[in-house]
Length: 148
Ligand SMILES: [Zn+2]
Image 1: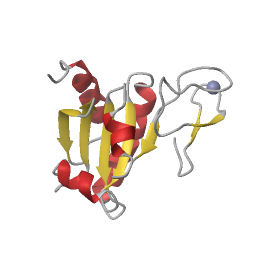
Image 2: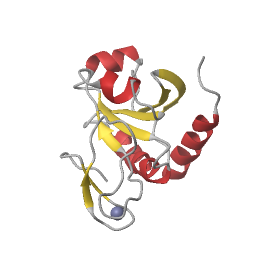
Image 3: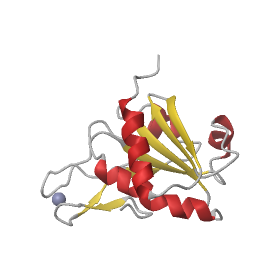
């Protein structure tokens, strides 16, 4: 899990690693070299760098602190970062802060999950769903042909 300081505990050995919001290549554990879950955050200011320019497909979780269903979907979003490590980057976007991004992706209802590939939306999922449904949705969305 990432906390506010961008520290992710390695699921394989427990070592705490600092994972950047944007980077070339994939985040790996400094100790055991296994792939780390890539769970980070973006605002309007760094959305392009963190999400649109990502070489990996990105699961964007548009959420807000006051939104109860957002808290329900959060464990599934975090789990997706772990299960799809190396194939998916997960970016949480607080719509209270990132208001332009919320407007751009029509986040009238949250939680809104987006699967983006090089900035193009491949799939949308609105509302709280259990963890296994989040994982299934991500798996299916990753299998869709890339947007033209
Ligand atoms: Zn490790």
